[in-house]
Image (cartoon, rainbow, N blue to C red):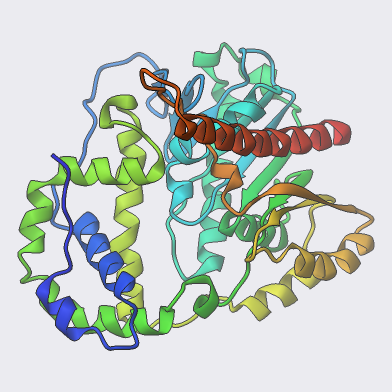
Length: 396
């Protein structure tokens, strides 16, 4: 049975006229899905002789040809397809929230990169208004994962530590992940990637990055004292299976059973929302550092020698052009190389999935339209993966 979410009464009466109705619905939905008292989704634990920091998922899904990946702590490792010695190691940072479940939201793009011979390490992160903290955290998590790979190899993929020694390190980031990628390349000098492929860079202030942020903050603050007493807590606690289905549907997955190990990521995904709401209720009104502070620091400290800026033809929030103007003098100063490319697509093209369209007994115009739209979208993400892959191979 699907979970029906309706705005609680206190939200219906407390919303100001300036707050749009969809904001109320969105907020109440978030509350339902993120109640801290909810029942946990925990995968069953089994004994294994495999090192404790690895969990494997080899379940085949309808959203991509294979989802064969390994989990090491919070990172997800996708080996080359078919299994072979990798050409390079790629660290991957997805967008805000959706980057927490890359095995669902970026599975097709990652699969295309893996088929080109790359080993991809996706680093999920918690959404926060403190971008410096997030950048430090993804850098630490990735290097912890890399240390284990260099010590133990990747047994499930038949890769020994010696197979990974000396491989070039590259980085791919999308949207907010692209911002973190650039900040990592500016904050640190240890184990920086040889090249950054920066997709749909976005460094906008909170008032622009989060629609209706100014109305949303006071709304959360106003609602906080009442939330603990709300019957919505009980609703969420008793409907956790349905809530999980809602999240999976939004993310593009089909069923809870499509990948049992993905529940680990879904827990992390859901757990982010209360923390973000709490920051908003405390009156946080801007990212730290501010966008202007980020730009100044990047201008002075960016240290990645090769950079590709990827912009889509229909992306209204992309700031690649602004980033290029900031990076160009710095890249020249470190004798690096900065390139850019404009591809067909939009801001969510990297999240496009190869979902199978089920045709009914008769082939209708709707089927034709859906399949044509799918083919067009898949062509965009394939072009994206090939463009980045070819560029990285030229650097090697």
